[in-house]
Image 1 (cartoon, rainbow, N blue to C red):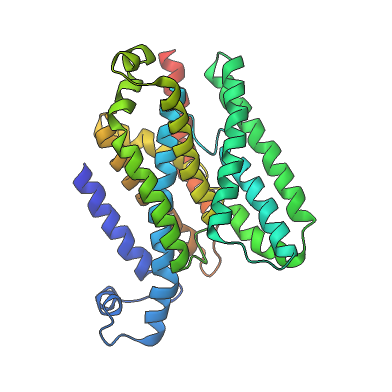
Image 2: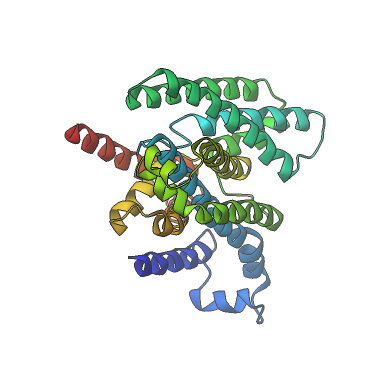
Length: 327
Protein backbone atom coordinates (compact mmCIF):
# COMPACT_ATOMS: atom_id res chain seq x y z
CA UNK A 1 0.00 0.00 0.00
CA UNK A 2 2.83 2.38 0.84
CA UNK A 3 4.47 1.58 -2.51
CA UNK A 4 1.21 2.47 -4.32
CA UNK A 5 1.00 5.74 -2.38
CA UNK A 6 4.60 6.61 -3.31
CA UNK A 7 3.95 5.90 -7.01
CA UNK A 8 0.80 8.05 -6.90
CA UNK A 9 2.78 10.80 -5.13
CA UNK A 10 5.44 10.85 -7.90
CA UNK A 11 2.81 10.84 -10.67
CA UNK A 12 0.95 13.79 -9.12
CA UNK A 13 4.17 15.81 -8.74
CA UNK A 14 4.94 15.29 -12.44
CA UNK A 15 1.37 16.22 -13.45
CA UNK A 16 1.42 19.36 -11.28
CA UNK A 17 4.64 20.48 -12.98
CA UNK A 18 3.45 19.42 -16.44
CA UNK A 19 -0.14 20.72 -16.62
CA UNK A 20 -1.36 24.30 -16.64
CA UNK A 21 -2.22 27.18 -18.96
CA UNK A 22 1.15 26.51 -20.62
CA UNK A 23 1.68 22.77 -21.03
CA UNK A 24 5.26 21.54 -20.66
CA UNK A 25 6.16 18.22 -22.23
CA UNK A 26 7.08 15.54 -19.71
CA UNK A 27 10.28 14.84 -21.65
CA UNK A 28 11.38 18.47 -21.20
CA UNK A 29 10.78 18.54 -17.43
CA UNK A 30 14.08 16.76 -16.70
CA UNK A 31 15.98 19.22 -18.91
CA UNK A 32 14.36 22.20 -17.18
CA UNK A 33 15.01 20.85 -13.68
CA UNK A 34 18.68 20.27 -14.46
CA UNK A 35 19.11 23.45 -16.60
CA UNK A 36 20.09 21.58 -19.74
CA UNK A 37 19.34 24.07 -22.51
CA UNK A 38 15.65 24.50 -21.68
CA UNK A 39 13.28 27.14 -23.05
CA UNK A 40 13.58 30.29 -20.90
CA UNK A 41 9.80 30.80 -20.61
CA UNK A 42 9.15 27.19 -19.61
CA UNK A 43 12.13 27.33 -17.22
CA UNK A 44 10.65 30.38 -15.43
CA UNK A 45 7.14 28.88 -15.31
CA UNK A 46 8.38 25.71 -13.64
CA UNK A 47 11.06 27.13 -11.32
CA UNK A 48 9.27 30.32 -10.26
CA UNK A 49 5.60 29.25 -10.24
CA UNK A 50 4.79 25.55 -10.47
CA UNK A 51 7.62 23.94 -8.50
CA UNK A 52 7.28 26.20 -5.41
CA UNK A 53 3.51 25.72 -5.52
CA UNK A 54 3.89 21.94 -5.79
CA UNK A 55 6.31 21.89 -2.86
CA UNK A 56 3.87 23.98 -0.82
CA UNK A 57 1.07 21.48 -1.54
CA UNK A 58 3.33 18.60 -0.44
CA UNK A 59 4.60 20.23 2.76
CA UNK A 60 1.39 21.92 3.90
CA UNK A 61 -0.84 19.00 2.90
CA UNK A 62 1.30 16.67 5.00
CA UNK A 63 1.28 19.14 7.91
CA UNK A 64 -2.52 19.44 7.82
CA UNK A 65 -3.06 15.67 7.79
CA UNK A 66 -0.62 15.21 10.67
CA UNK A 67 -2.31 17.99 12.66
CA UNK A 68 -5.64 16.21 12.20
CA UNK A 69 -4.15 12.90 13.33
CA UNK A 70 -2.84 14.49 16.54
CA UNK A 71 -6.22 16.10 17.32
CA UNK A 72 -8.05 12.83 16.67
CA UNK A 73 -5.63 11.10 19.04
CA UNK A 74 -6.06 13.79 21.71
CA UNK A 75 -9.88 13.82 21.66
CA UNK A 76 -10.22 10.12 20.70
CA UNK A 77 -12.65 11.27 18.03
CA UNK A 78 -12.33 10.45 14.28
CA UNK A 79 -14.18 13.67 13.33
CA UNK A 80 -11.82 15.99 15.22
CA UNK A 81 -9.73 18.20 12.94
CA UNK A 82 -8.32 21.75 12.82
CA UNK A 83 -11.02 22.97 10.42
CA UNK A 84 -14.05 21.37 12.10
CA UNK A 85 -12.99 22.34 15.64
CA UNK A 86 -12.61 25.98 14.55
CA UNK A 87 -8.84 26.08 15.12
CA UNK A 88 -8.16 27.04 11.49
CA UNK A 89 -10.69 29.88 11.73
CA UNK A 90 -9.10 31.19 14.93
CA UNK A 91 -5.67 31.23 13.28
CA UNK A 92 -7.17 32.88 10.22
CA UNK A 93 -8.69 35.65 12.38
CA UNK A 94 -5.43 36.59 14.14
CA UNK A 95 -3.42 36.44 10.89
CA UNK A 96 -6.00 38.65 9.16
CA UNK A 97 -5.74 41.24 11.97
CA UNK A 98 -1.93 41.25 11.75
CA UNK A 99 -1.94 41.49 7.94
CA UNK A 100 -4.49 44.34 7.84
CA UNK A 101 -2.64 46.33 10.51
CA UNK A 102 0.72 45.83 8.80
CA UNK A 103 -0.52 46.52 5.26
CA UNK A 104 -2.42 49.64 6.34
CA UNK A 105 0.89 51.04 7.62
CA UNK A 106 2.75 49.82 4.50
CA UNK A 107 4.82 47.31 6.46
CA UNK A 108 5.87 43.95 5.02
CA UNK A 109 4.79 40.96 7.11
CA UNK A 110 7.50 38.35 7.59
CA UNK A 111 6.87 34.60 7.49
CA UNK A 112 7.87 34.32 11.14
CA UNK A 113 5.28 36.96 12.11
CA UNK A 114 2.53 35.17 10.18
CA UNK A 115 3.33 31.77 11.72
CA UNK A 116 3.48 33.32 15.20
CA UNK A 117 0.13 35.08 14.68
CA UNK A 118 -1.45 31.87 13.37
CA UNK A 119 -0.04 29.89 16.31
CA UNK A 120 -1.45 32.41 18.82
CA UNK A 121 -4.86 32.20 17.13
CA UNK A 122 -4.73 28.39 17.13
CA UNK A 123 -3.83 28.25 20.83
CA UNK A 124 -6.59 30.72 21.81
CA UNK A 125 -9.20 28.75 19.86
CA UNK A 126 -7.85 25.45 21.19
CA UNK A 127 -8.30 26.87 24.70
CA UNK A 128 -11.99 27.49 24.04
CA UNK A 129 -12.38 24.00 22.52
CA UNK A 130 -10.72 22.40 25.58
CA UNK A 131 -13.04 24.33 27.91
CA UNK A 132 -16.04 23.07 25.94
CA UNK A 133 -14.62 19.52 25.98
CA UNK A 134 -14.55 19.62 29.80
CA UNK A 135 -18.17 20.72 30.14
CA UNK A 136 -19.82 18.48 27.50
CA UNK A 137 -19.81 14.68 27.57
CA UNK A 138 -21.01 13.90 24.06
CA UNK A 139 -18.48 14.14 21.21
CA UNK A 140 -21.20 15.44 18.88
CA UNK A 141 -21.62 18.51 21.10
CA UNK A 142 -17.86 19.10 20.99
CA UNK A 143 -17.95 19.11 17.19
CA UNK A 144 -20.98 21.43 17.10
CA UNK A 145 -19.25 23.80 19.53
CA UNK A 146 -16.11 23.78 17.39
CA UNK A 147 -18.13 24.57 14.27
CA UNK A 148 -19.84 27.47 16.07
CA UNK A 149 -16.47 28.85 17.23
CA UNK A 150 -15.28 28.59 13.63
CA UNK A 151 -18.31 30.49 12.33
CA UNK A 152 -17.81 33.28 14.89
CA UNK A 153 -14.11 33.66 13.98
CA UNK A 154 -14.91 33.58 10.24
CA UNK A 155 -17.62 36.24 10.68
CA UNK A 156 -15.20 38.55 12.53
CA UNK A 157 -12.56 37.93 9.85
CA UNK A 158 -15.02 38.83 7.06
CA UNK A 159 -15.97 41.99 8.98
CA UNK A 160 -12.28 42.99 9.22
CA UNK A 161 -11.69 42.30 5.52
CA UNK A 162 -14.81 44.30 4.55
CA UNK A 163 -13.54 47.46 6.25
CA UNK A 164 -9.87 47.02 5.30
CA UNK A 165 -8.06 49.14 2.70
CA UNK A 166 -8.41 48.14 -0.96
CA UNK A 167 -4.82 46.95 -1.15
CA UNK A 168 -5.30 44.82 1.97
CA UNK A 169 -8.51 43.29 0.60
CA UNK A 170 -6.78 42.16 -2.60
CA UNK A 171 -4.05 40.41 -0.62
CA UNK A 172 -6.44 38.90 1.92
CA UNK A 173 -9.18 37.68 -0.42
CA UNK A 174 -7.29 34.83 -2.13
CA UNK A 175 -5.55 33.86 1.10
CA UNK A 176 -8.81 33.74 3.11
CA UNK A 177 -10.31 31.27 0.60
CA UNK A 178 -7.31 28.93 0.74
CA UNK A 179 -4.70 28.80 -2.03
CA UNK A 180 -1.16 27.59 -2.73
CA UNK A 181 -0.65 30.21 -5.45
CA UNK A 182 1.98 32.92 -5.10
CA UNK A 183 4.32 30.71 -3.06
CA UNK A 184 7.98 31.71 -3.30
CA UNK A 185 11.12 29.67 -2.59
CA UNK A 186 11.65 31.71 0.59
CA UNK A 187 8.20 30.62 1.78
CA UNK A 188 8.99 27.00 0.88
CA UNK A 189 12.21 27.08 2.92
CA UNK A 190 10.46 28.47 6.01
CA UNK A 191 7.49 26.09 5.84
CA UNK A 192 9.82 23.14 5.19
CA UNK A 193 11.95 23.89 8.25
CA UNK A 194 8.95 24.40 10.57
CA UNK A 195 6.88 21.49 9.27
CA UNK A 196 9.62 18.88 8.88
CA UNK A 197 11.12 19.66 12.29
CA UNK A 198 7.69 19.42 13.97
CA UNK A 199 6.84 16.24 12.02
CA UNK A 200 10.13 14.66 13.14
CA UNK A 201 9.23 15.38 16.78
CA UNK A 202 5.79 13.83 16.23
CA UNK A 203 7.41 10.72 14.72
CA UNK A 204 9.76 10.41 17.70
CA UNK A 205 6.67 10.44 19.92
CA UNK A 206 5.21 7.36 18.19
CA UNK A 207 5.60 5.12 21.26
CA UNK A 208 3.80 7.40 23.79
CA UNK A 209 1.11 8.17 21.19
CA UNK A 210 0.55 4.42 20.69
CA UNK A 211 0.30 3.96 24.46
CA UNK A 212 -2.15 6.90 24.77
CA UNK A 213 -4.37 5.35 22.08
CA UNK A 214 -4.83 2.32 24.36
CA UNK A 215 -6.09 4.50 27.22
CA UNK A 216 -4.77 6.96 29.77
CA UNK A 217 -4.30 4.30 32.48
CA UNK A 218 -2.22 2.14 30.16
CA UNK A 219 -0.14 5.16 29.08
CA UNK A 220 0.52 6.11 32.72
CA UNK A 221 1.60 2.55 33.50
CA UNK A 222 4.02 2.81 30.56
CA UNK A 223 5.55 5.89 32.20
CA UNK A 224 3.87 8.61 30.10
CA UNK A 225 3.31 11.94 31.86
CA UNK A 226 -0.27 12.51 30.66
CA UNK A 227 -0.45 16.23 31.44
CA UNK A 228 2.87 17.02 29.71
CA UNK A 229 2.00 14.68 26.84
CA UNK A 230 -1.30 16.48 26.20
CA UNK A 231 0.39 19.90 26.22
CA UNK A 232 2.99 18.70 23.71
CA UNK A 233 0.30 17.11 21.53
CA UNK A 234 -1.78 20.32 21.41
CA UNK A 235 1.32 22.48 20.79
CA UNK A 236 2.60 20.33 17.91
CA UNK A 237 -0.83 20.19 16.29
CA UNK A 238 -1.19 23.98 16.62
CA UNK A 239 2.26 24.63 15.09
CA UNK A 240 1.44 22.44 12.07
CA UNK A 241 -1.97 24.09 11.64
CA UNK A 242 -0.44 27.57 12.08
CA UNK A 243 2.11 26.93 9.33
CA UNK A 244 -0.67 25.96 6.91
CA UNK A 245 -2.84 28.98 7.76
CA UNK A 246 0.10 31.41 7.52
CA UNK A 247 1.05 30.39 3.98
CA UNK A 248 -2.09 28.93 2.36
CA UNK A 249 -5.05 30.07 4.43
CA UNK A 250 -7.79 27.75 5.77
CA UNK A 251 -8.06 24.39 3.96
CA UNK A 252 -11.04 22.23 4.85
CA UNK A 253 -11.48 18.53 5.64
CA UNK A 254 -7.91 17.38 4.88
CA UNK A 255 -7.13 16.97 8.58
CA UNK A 256 -10.18 14.76 9.10
CA UNK A 257 -10.40 12.73 5.90
CA UNK A 258 -6.75 11.80 5.30
CA UNK A 259 -5.93 10.14 8.68
CA UNK A 260 -9.14 8.11 8.44
CA UNK A 261 -8.43 7.03 4.85
CA UNK A 262 -4.81 6.11 5.68
CA UNK A 263 -5.86 3.94 8.64
CA UNK A 264 -8.48 2.23 6.46
CA UNK A 265 -6.02 1.60 3.62
CA UNK A 266 -3.18 0.34 5.82
CA UNK A 267 -5.57 -1.48 8.22
CA UNK A 268 -3.57 -0.35 11.21
CA UNK A 269 -3.50 2.55 13.66
CA UNK A 270 0.11 2.07 14.80
CA UNK A 271 1.64 5.56 14.98
CA UNK A 272 5.03 4.35 13.73
CA UNK A 273 3.37 3.52 10.39
CA UNK A 274 0.43 5.93 10.36
CA UNK A 275 2.42 9.13 11.07
CA UNK A 276 4.66 9.05 7.93
CA UNK A 277 1.78 7.58 5.90
CA UNK A 278 -0.50 10.45 7.02
CA UNK A 279 2.06 13.01 5.90
CA UNK A 280 2.37 11.26 2.52
CA UNK A 281 -1.43 10.93 2.22
CA UNK A 282 -1.95 14.61 3.01
CA UNK A 283 0.60 15.56 0.36
CA UNK A 284 -1.12 13.34 -2.23
CA UNK A 285 -4.59 14.66 -1.33
CA UNK A 286 -3.53 18.32 -1.63
CA UNK A 287 -1.52 17.73 -4.81
CA UNK A 288 -4.56 16.15 -6.47
CA UNK A 289 -6.99 18.82 -5.24
CA UNK A 290 -4.67 21.68 -6.26
CA UNK A 291 -4.27 20.16 -9.73
CA UNK A 292 -8.06 20.04 -10.10
CA UNK A 293 -8.45 23.58 -8.69
CA UNK A 294 -6.19 25.18 -11.29
CA UNK A 295 -6.87 23.05 -14.40
CA UNK A 296 -10.57 22.07 -14.53
CA UNK A 297 -11.88 25.59 -15.23
CA UNK A 298 -8.61 27.13 -16.49
CA UNK A 299 -7.77 30.00 -16.78
CA UNK A 300 -10.14 30.47 -13.80
CA UNK A 301 -8.85 28.96 -10.56
CA UNK A 302 -10.94 27.49 -7.77
CA UNK A 303 -10.01 27.87 -4.11
CA UNK A 304 -8.25 24.77 -2.82
CA UNK A 305 -10.66 24.59 0.13
CA UNK A 306 -13.65 24.20 -2.22
CA UNK A 307 -12.08 21.17 -3.91
CA UNK A 308 -10.91 19.52 -0.68
CA UNK A 309 -14.45 19.93 0.70
CA UNK A 310 -15.93 18.10 -2.31
CA UNK A 311 -13.69 15.06 -1.70
CA UNK A 312 -13.28 15.32 2.08
CA UNK A 313 -16.89 15.94 3.19
CA UNK A 314 -18.20 12.53 1.93
CA UNK A 315 -15.50 10.82 4.00
CA UNK A 316 -16.65 12.70 7.12
CA UNK A 317 -20.28 11.76 6.42
CA UNK A 318 -19.18 8.13 6.07
CA UNK A 319 -17.37 8.27 9.43
CA UNK A 320 -20.45 9.72 11.14
CA UNK A 321 -22.77 7.10 9.63
CA UNK A 322 -20.44 4.27 10.65
CA UNK A 323 -20.22 5.71 14.16
CA UNK A 324 -24.01 5.84 14.38
CA UNK A 325 -24.33 2.20 13.23
CA UNK A 326 -21.82 1.09 15.87
CA UNK A 327 -23.57 3.19 18.53
